[in-house]
Image (cartoon, rainbow, N blue to C red; front, side, top):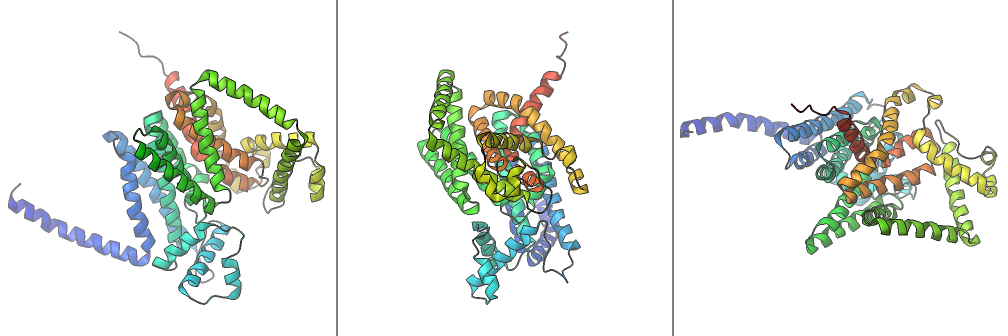
Length: 454
């Protein structure tokens, strides 16, 4: 290329760069967090496609760009459809306004800005206390009041978590299951709603994905220094989870420890059988002790209390207890062993099936029906997918399985409101989709006719 051509190219590029700079400046003036989140998403998209062939990288990049664009569009629509003469900002969910206001009050306290005494009390209220409030307060200390920008932060966190899991499963399960799982993570309506919210779910999911990926790296990396560093990252993420949601540390450590233990034993069939038999005998012996029975019954009663509380929340509910136990809260203390057993069985059945067709009471519930059918399909593909996933990468499959199982256990035994169950079922979905995708892709591949040999 001649010097004249180079100079011409530079001259031609200058107007574009100036226009881009002006656009970024205007965007930063309107919403600094929009620019920050945009700068964060760009390397995430590049990370998702790193090392892939050209066609696959293009598909992944296009998918992520569409996913980000549709989410940003949802926030823009929220802004445009909100009557700001009546409310200071709009929100997708009722709890969002509460979180945003509390974070702003904390920000004002930190900056020494006077606030109402009632707001001061609510700012430090123990109810829904989470470190996310302080994250939001810190961000708004830097950029000012940003109720819509906080939604963009949630989007960036969710996209980051999705990319981390995609990079985890891609080399283990293959291109087709990884792409299918990523599509479901980005397209399922309940997870879409999660990802654009100003609630704690995006931050919780991002930290969980980081802990999971770091735990896998800790046991796979052969260099001791890198392994220790990855384990430290997993531990730090688990500790941070405890500040976001109560018992987050125990949930994450149990998921990681359970996954790694399962992976270690499942590749040793004799050890696996011995552990299963020993565990059955040990549990039977322990449960035969009256003190342990009392403790187990107490835990079931406590779970049933949470369930009963959800039943009486606004919205549509479903029942797991025998009818007599709903009449008076004190009656739960008289729960018998058969009643407790029925409660547990119904809880897991409801987790898998609710809402049933006869539980669709509104247009919103009817709109959720397509995703419910997808949920049933995921459950149907999961057993076969788990077998195939364990064959391909036992560590990754075991970690994903235990994250999904523990999340399901916690939600199944305490839910009672249909809307809350659907929302909280999303705690297991980000891990279940990859396992089910392996099963679906494998079945599709096996159903194709074999090529004819000439």
